[in-house]
Amino acid sequence: MDCSTKSICVIGLGYIGLPTASLLGTKGYQVTGVDVSKDIVDTINQGKIHIVEPDLDLLVKSAVNAGNLKASLEPCKADIFIIAVPTPFKENHVPDLSYVEHATRTIAPYVQKGNLVILESTSPVGTTDLVTDILQEYGHNTAQDIFVAHCPERVLPGRILIELVQNDRIVGGINNASTKVASRFYKEFVSGQVFETTAKTAELSKLTENSFRDVNIAFANELSLICDRENIDVWELISLANRHPRVNILQPGPGVGGHCIAVDPWFIIHRNVEQSKLIRAAREVNDAKPQWVISKVKEKAERFKHPVIACLGLAFKANVDDLRESPALAITKQLAEENIGEIIVCEPNIKAHKEFNLYSFDEAIERADILLVLVDHEPFKSLSAAKLSEKIVIDTRGIVK
Ligand code: SAJ
Image (cartoon, rainbow, N blue to C red; front, side):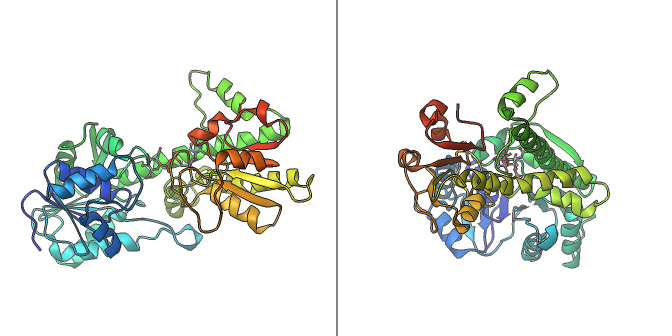
């Protein structure tokens, strides 16, 4: 299969690849989106989507109906290749680059002289060089014939379509020519500024952004433990400290979830063990928080024979339906396994869960002896301490006023 001019081949149709492919499709590019899952390919070719993200359904439908977005199991020749596949970690937090390697090997036979290959996946330092080495293995002259660059995605789930266009971008090529060609491409559809640097700086920049957030959340989580001991309201403390013009502390919670912030700092640590003690400590503080929450629930549950514990929220953060790597889900599962009482769950953003019966917000509150707030979903913000005086409330998000 051959694509026409100004053609783009996007590898990986997940949370980054699909929004990117459909956005480019609506901007007039001829886009082929490639995924290893036949179900995903079929769904997209019907103009439908397999992930939840505001307005993405409309964008995909419009790009598919215009004939500018096609999904396929196989790549094709194109002017630009965008790799947007997962970069998780393996045992012991060792980065797993197998998806990037596989994606590169898949496109290598289709890459031609003058093409641009962009790695968008969040990647450890050196991954763009790895992509380059693989392309060279297939006989490509990466010093002259093709352009290779890293441009890390920076979009926030829940705001992807807005941030895809409005966020500033960092573009780093393996050489100056690659940087320039990639930067010119992003300027065609990004309204934010496009900054040019090297591939390695672009790689570390993305990891730095997420590590910054992780360290800041760890600081807030550590404060929450200190405040609990000192019997001080941590949210009042943080809001007061943040009145200082140069202080901006984030919010404590039940732990850090999602597949970015809890993962990316390990990519720095893995390559720089001796130099990254603070980043590692922050990861450990955030990873320890769910167990601390569980110990709090157990402590309170001791007063009851068989308490009803209502867990409010399963998602990894507010107002999304994404349960992957969610501390709220991990806490709820462990409480259920440990048989501390009857666990009832309310998660307004999903219809059903294979392990838990889902209760309405009102029923969960009514039945609960212990109310455990795990996610700050919008509807939960109506909770008022005055109306819950008969119950024990453990509020990990500071929303009960
Ligand atoms: N969290 C807190 N306290 C806070 C803020 C967040 O406990 O004050 C928790 C959330 O509840 C959640 C986790 O942290 O469990 C991560 O949520 P998030 O909203 O901070 O970030 P993500 O994972 O949805 O998206 C991040 C974003 N990175 C930054 O804000 C620096 C996004 O811009 C990236 O594109 C994304 O990671 C990514 O794909 O790397």
